Image (cartoon, rainbow, N blue to C red; front, side, top):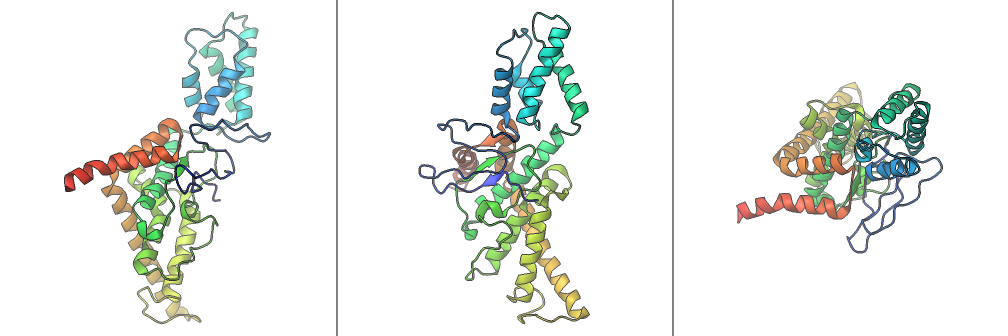
Length: 313
Protein backbone atom coordinates (compact mmCIF):
# COMPACT_ATOMS: atom_id res chain seq x y z
CA UNK A 1 0.00 0.00 0.00
CA UNK A 2 2.94 2.35 -0.09
CA UNK A 3 2.97 4.01 -3.52
CA UNK A 4 4.88 7.19 -3.06
CA UNK A 5 4.65 10.86 -3.96
CA UNK A 6 7.92 11.60 -2.25
CA UNK A 7 11.34 10.37 -3.33
CA UNK A 8 14.83 11.20 -2.21
CA UNK A 9 17.00 10.39 -5.14
CA UNK A 10 18.61 13.84 -5.06
CA UNK A 11 21.73 14.20 -2.96
CA UNK A 12 22.55 17.63 -4.34
CA UNK A 13 20.86 20.02 -6.71
CA UNK A 14 23.70 19.86 -9.20
CA UNK A 15 24.75 16.26 -9.02
CA UNK A 16 21.53 14.46 -8.13
CA UNK A 17 19.45 12.33 -10.44
CA UNK A 18 15.88 11.15 -10.44
CA UNK A 19 14.97 7.64 -9.50
CA UNK A 20 12.35 5.75 -11.48
CA UNK A 21 8.96 6.27 -9.89
CA UNK A 22 6.30 3.58 -10.13
CA UNK A 23 3.49 5.56 -11.77
CA UNK A 24 5.23 8.58 -13.25
CA UNK A 25 8.65 10.00 -13.95
CA UNK A 26 9.56 13.31 -12.36
CA UNK A 27 12.12 15.46 -14.07
CA UNK A 28 14.05 18.68 -13.59
CA UNK A 29 13.12 21.82 -15.46
CA UNK A 30 15.85 21.32 -18.07
CA UNK A 31 15.19 17.66 -18.74
CA UNK A 32 12.85 16.56 -21.56
CA UNK A 33 9.47 15.16 -20.62
CA UNK A 34 9.78 11.36 -20.57
CA UNK A 35 7.51 9.41 -22.97
CA UNK A 36 4.42 7.76 -21.59
CA UNK A 37 4.58 4.01 -21.17
CA UNK A 38 1.98 1.74 -22.83
CA UNK A 39 0.18 1.06 -19.51
CA UNK A 40 0.66 4.69 -18.76
CA UNK A 41 0.00 5.88 -15.64
CA UNK A 42 -1.67 8.99 -14.41
CA UNK A 43 -0.27 12.20 -15.86
CA UNK A 44 0.26 15.33 -13.85
CA UNK A 45 -1.09 18.76 -14.77
CA UNK A 46 1.33 19.79 -17.53
CA UNK A 47 1.20 16.36 -19.13
CA UNK A 48 -2.61 16.40 -19.14
CA UNK A 49 -2.56 19.82 -20.81
CA UNK A 50 -0.11 18.49 -23.41
CA UNK A 51 -2.35 15.48 -24.10
CA UNK A 52 -5.36 17.76 -24.57
CA UNK A 53 -3.46 19.99 -26.98
CA UNK A 54 -2.18 16.95 -28.85
CA UNK A 55 -5.64 15.40 -29.08
CA UNK A 56 -7.26 18.53 -30.50
CA UNK A 57 -4.56 19.84 -32.81
CA UNK A 58 -6.42 18.66 -35.94
CA UNK A 59 -9.69 20.46 -35.13
CA UNK A 60 -10.88 24.04 -34.71
CA UNK A 61 -11.42 25.13 -31.13
CA UNK A 62 -14.11 27.60 -30.16
CA UNK A 63 -12.85 30.81 -28.51
CA UNK A 64 -14.14 29.74 -25.09
CA UNK A 65 -12.21 26.46 -24.94
CA UNK A 66 -9.65 26.58 -22.11
CA UNK A 67 -7.38 23.55 -22.23
CA UNK A 68 -5.62 24.68 -19.06
CA UNK A 69 -8.92 24.66 -17.15
CA UNK A 70 -9.79 21.26 -18.60
CA UNK A 71 -6.42 19.93 -17.47
CA UNK A 72 -7.03 21.18 -13.93
CA UNK A 73 -10.51 19.63 -13.76
CA UNK A 74 -9.39 16.20 -14.99
CA UNK A 75 -6.97 15.33 -12.19
CA UNK A 76 -7.05 11.57 -11.76
CA UNK A 77 -7.72 10.55 -15.36
CA UNK A 78 -5.17 8.31 -17.02
CA UNK A 79 -3.41 9.28 -20.24
CA UNK A 80 -5.60 6.79 -22.12
CA UNK A 81 -8.71 8.42 -20.68
CA UNK A 82 -7.43 11.88 -21.64
CA UNK A 83 -7.07 10.72 -25.24
CA UNK A 84 -10.52 9.12 -25.08
CA UNK A 85 -11.93 12.40 -23.76
CA UNK A 86 -10.59 14.30 -26.79
CA UNK A 87 -11.88 11.70 -29.24
CA UNK A 88 -15.34 11.62 -27.65
CA UNK A 89 -15.58 15.42 -27.67
CA UNK A 90 -14.64 15.50 -31.35
CA UNK A 91 -17.21 12.81 -32.16
CA UNK A 92 -19.84 14.79 -30.25
CA UNK A 93 -19.08 17.90 -32.31
CA UNK A 94 -19.26 15.89 -35.55
CA UNK A 95 -22.59 14.40 -34.49
CA UNK A 96 -23.93 17.92 -33.91
CA UNK A 97 -22.35 19.20 -37.17
CA UNK A 98 -20.65 21.89 -35.10
CA UNK A 99 -17.98 23.90 -36.94
CA UNK A 100 -15.81 24.16 -33.81
CA UNK A 101 -15.10 22.16 -30.70
CA UNK A 102 -16.62 23.80 -27.62
CA UNK A 103 -16.37 23.36 -23.87
CA UNK A 104 -19.89 21.89 -23.95
CA UNK A 105 -18.58 19.06 -26.14
CA UNK A 106 -15.82 18.34 -23.61
CA UNK A 107 -18.26 18.46 -20.70
CA UNK A 108 -20.60 16.00 -22.43
CA UNK A 109 -17.71 13.70 -23.30
CA UNK A 110 -16.45 13.85 -19.70
CA UNK A 111 -19.90 12.96 -18.36
CA UNK A 112 -20.01 9.87 -20.56
CA UNK A 113 -16.46 8.92 -19.62
CA UNK A 114 -17.25 9.10 -15.91
CA UNK A 115 -20.36 6.96 -16.40
CA UNK A 116 -18.10 4.19 -17.71
CA UNK A 117 -15.34 4.89 -15.17
CA UNK A 118 -16.92 6.23 -11.97
CA UNK A 119 -14.61 7.51 -9.28
CA UNK A 120 -11.74 8.29 -11.66
CA UNK A 121 -11.64 12.03 -10.97
CA UNK A 122 -9.84 13.10 -7.84
CA UNK A 123 -12.06 15.43 -5.84
CA UNK A 124 -10.74 18.70 -4.41
CA UNK A 125 -10.96 17.42 -0.84
CA UNK A 126 -9.02 14.28 -1.79
CA UNK A 127 -6.33 16.37 -3.48
CA UNK A 128 -6.14 18.57 -0.38
CA UNK A 129 -5.75 15.49 1.80
CA UNK A 130 -3.04 13.97 -0.38
CA UNK A 131 -1.11 17.23 -0.56
CA UNK A 132 -1.36 17.77 3.19
CA UNK A 133 -0.20 14.21 3.85
CA UNK A 134 2.92 14.38 1.73
CA UNK A 135 3.81 17.94 2.79
CA UNK A 136 3.53 16.93 6.42
CA UNK A 137 6.22 14.33 5.88
CA UNK A 138 8.39 16.79 3.96
CA UNK A 139 8.08 19.51 6.60
CA UNK A 140 9.00 17.15 9.44
CA UNK A 141 11.93 15.87 7.42
CA UNK A 142 13.15 19.43 6.98
CA UNK A 143 13.07 19.97 10.75
CA UNK A 144 14.55 16.63 11.77
CA UNK A 145 18.32 17.00 11.28
CA UNK A 146 19.07 14.15 13.70
CA UNK A 147 17.36 11.75 11.31
CA UNK A 148 20.17 12.31 8.77
CA UNK A 149 17.70 12.75 5.92
CA UNK A 150 18.79 13.45 2.38
CA UNK A 151 17.97 16.85 0.98
CA UNK A 152 16.75 18.51 -1.08
CA UNK A 153 13.59 16.53 -1.77
CA UNK A 154 11.55 16.35 -4.92
CA UNK A 155 7.84 15.80 -4.43
CA UNK A 156 4.91 15.06 -6.71
CA UNK A 157 1.18 14.66 -6.27
CA UNK A 158 0.39 11.54 -8.27
CA UNK A 159 -3.40 11.52 -8.45
CA UNK A 160 -3.96 7.79 -8.69
CA UNK A 161 -1.02 6.57 -6.68
CA UNK A 162 -2.04 4.19 -3.93
CA UNK A 163 -2.37 5.67 -0.49
CA UNK A 164 -0.50 6.24 1.66
CA UNK A 165 2.73 8.07 1.15
CA UNK A 166 5.31 6.15 3.08
CA UNK A 167 7.51 8.42 5.16
CA UNK A 168 10.30 5.86 4.83
CA UNK A 169 10.59 6.71 1.13
CA UNK A 170 11.80 10.14 2.20
CA UNK A 171 14.87 8.82 3.92
CA UNK A 172 15.15 5.11 3.39
CA UNK A 173 15.26 3.38 -0.03
CA UNK A 174 13.88 0.15 1.46
CA UNK A 175 10.18 0.52 2.33
CA UNK A 176 9.21 -1.38 5.46
CA UNK A 177 12.79 -1.43 6.76
CA UNK A 178 13.84 0.51 9.83
CA UNK A 179 16.99 2.65 9.54
CA UNK A 180 20.17 0.88 10.58
CA UNK A 181 21.27 3.40 13.20
CA UNK A 182 22.55 1.54 16.28
CA UNK A 183 24.07 4.74 17.72
CA UNK A 184 20.87 6.76 17.67
CA UNK A 185 19.50 7.81 21.05
CA UNK A 186 15.92 7.92 22.24
CA UNK A 187 15.38 11.49 20.99
CA UNK A 188 16.49 10.55 17.49
CA UNK A 189 14.22 7.50 17.36
CA UNK A 190 11.37 9.60 18.71
CA UNK A 191 12.00 12.12 15.92
CA UNK A 192 11.84 9.27 13.42
CA UNK A 193 8.53 8.16 14.92
CA UNK A 194 7.26 11.73 14.51
CA UNK A 195 8.35 11.70 10.88
CA UNK A 196 6.47 8.45 10.29
CA UNK A 197 3.30 9.93 11.80
CA UNK A 198 3.63 13.37 10.20
CA UNK A 199 1.35 12.59 7.26
CA UNK A 200 -1.47 11.58 9.56
CA UNK A 201 -0.85 14.59 11.81
CA UNK A 202 -0.90 16.91 8.78
CA UNK A 203 -4.25 15.53 7.66
CA UNK A 204 -5.71 16.16 11.11
CA UNK A 205 -4.19 19.64 11.23
CA UNK A 206 -5.44 20.55 7.75
CA UNK A 207 -8.81 18.76 7.55
CA UNK A 208 -9.73 18.06 11.15
CA UNK A 209 -9.44 14.27 11.05
CA UNK A 210 -7.00 11.70 9.66
CA UNK A 211 -7.86 9.10 7.04
CA UNK A 212 -6.71 5.52 6.56
CA UNK A 213 -3.97 6.85 4.29
CA UNK A 214 -1.29 6.48 6.96
CA UNK A 215 -1.74 2.74 7.45
CA UNK A 216 1.76 1.71 6.34
CA UNK A 217 3.43 4.45 8.36
CA UNK A 218 1.37 3.64 11.45
CA UNK A 219 2.27 -0.03 11.17
CA UNK A 220 5.97 0.77 10.84
CA UNK A 221 5.80 3.29 13.70
CA UNK A 222 4.10 0.72 15.94
CA UNK A 223 6.77 -1.85 15.11
CA UNK A 224 9.51 0.68 15.88
CA UNK A 225 7.88 1.81 19.14
CA UNK A 226 7.54 -1.81 20.26
CA UNK A 227 11.22 -2.37 19.49
CA UNK A 228 12.12 0.71 21.53
CA UNK A 229 10.14 -0.69 24.47
CA UNK A 230 11.01 -4.40 24.35
CA UNK A 231 14.56 -4.38 22.91
CA UNK A 232 16.15 -1.05 23.71
CA UNK A 233 14.70 -0.10 27.11
CA UNK A 234 13.42 3.27 25.83
CA UNK A 235 9.85 2.95 27.06
CA UNK A 236 7.88 3.18 30.30
CA UNK A 237 8.44 -0.52 31.12
CA UNK A 238 12.01 0.17 32.21
CA UNK A 239 15.46 -0.96 31.15
CA UNK A 240 14.81 -4.69 30.84
CA UNK A 241 14.77 -6.27 27.40
CA UNK A 242 11.46 -8.12 27.21
CA UNK A 243 11.23 -11.44 25.37
CA UNK A 244 8.63 -13.91 26.62
CA UNK A 245 5.66 -11.97 27.91
CA UNK A 246 2.68 -12.97 29.99
CA UNK A 247 -0.71 -11.28 29.74
CA UNK A 248 0.12 -8.67 32.36
CA UNK A 249 3.46 -7.76 30.75
CA UNK A 250 1.78 -7.65 27.35
CA UNK A 251 -0.61 -5.02 28.66
CA UNK A 252 2.26 -2.96 30.06
CA UNK A 253 4.13 -3.19 26.73
CA UNK A 254 1.02 -2.10 24.84
CA UNK A 255 0.59 0.92 27.08
CA UNK A 256 4.26 1.87 26.74
CA UNK A 257 4.08 1.56 22.93
CA UNK A 258 0.89 3.63 22.86
CA UNK A 259 2.55 6.30 25.03
CA UNK A 260 5.54 6.54 22.65
CA UNK A 261 3.27 6.84 19.61
CA UNK A 262 1.16 9.53 21.26
CA UNK A 263 4.29 11.44 22.26
CA UNK A 264 5.65 11.28 18.70
CA UNK A 265 2.30 12.22 17.17
CA UNK A 266 2.01 15.25 19.46
CA UNK A 267 5.55 16.23 18.46
CA UNK A 268 4.67 16.00 14.74
CA UNK A 269 1.43 17.95 15.15
CA UNK A 270 3.14 20.68 17.19
CA UNK A 271 5.92 21.03 14.60
CA UNK A 272 3.44 21.40 11.73
CA UNK A 273 1.46 23.96 13.73
CA UNK A 274 4.60 25.91 14.62
CA UNK A 275 5.74 25.95 10.97
CA UNK A 276 2.31 26.63 9.48
CA UNK A 277 3.69 29.18 7.02
CA UNK A 278 6.04 26.63 5.47
CA UNK A 279 3.37 23.94 5.52
CA UNK A 280 0.70 26.10 3.87
CA UNK A 281 3.15 27.27 1.22
CA UNK A 282 4.17 23.70 0.36
CA UNK A 283 0.56 22.50 0.19
CA UNK A 284 -0.56 25.44 -1.95
CA UNK A 285 2.32 24.99 -4.39
CA UNK A 286 1.75 21.26 -4.68
CA UNK A 287 -1.98 21.71 -5.29
CA UNK A 288 -1.30 24.42 -7.86
CA UNK A 289 1.45 22.67 -9.81
CA UNK A 290 0.87 19.02 -8.81
CA UNK A 291 4.65 18.60 -8.82
CA UNK A 292 7.63 20.45 -7.41
CA UNK A 293 11.28 20.04 -8.14
CA UNK A 294 13.90 19.81 -5.43
CA UNK A 295 14.87 23.44 -6.08
CA UNK A 296 11.27 24.62 -5.66
CA UNK A 297 10.85 22.77 -2.37
CA UNK A 298 14.11 24.18 -1.07
CA UNK A 299 13.15 27.71 -2.15
CA UNK A 300 9.77 27.54 -0.39
CA UNK A 301 11.37 26.31 2.83
CA UNK A 302 14.13 28.93 2.57
CA UNK A 303 11.62 31.76 2.07
CA UNK A 304 9.65 30.56 5.07
CA UNK A 305 12.81 30.42 7.22
CA UNK A 306 14.04 33.90 6.26
CA UNK A 307 11.42 35.93 8.22
CA UNK A 308 12.10 33.81 11.31
CA UNK A 309 15.85 34.33 10.96
CA UNK A 310 15.37 38.10 10.59
CA UNK A 311 13.11 38.14 13.67
CA UNK A 312 15.63 36.19 15.73
CA UNK A 313 18.49 38.44 14.66
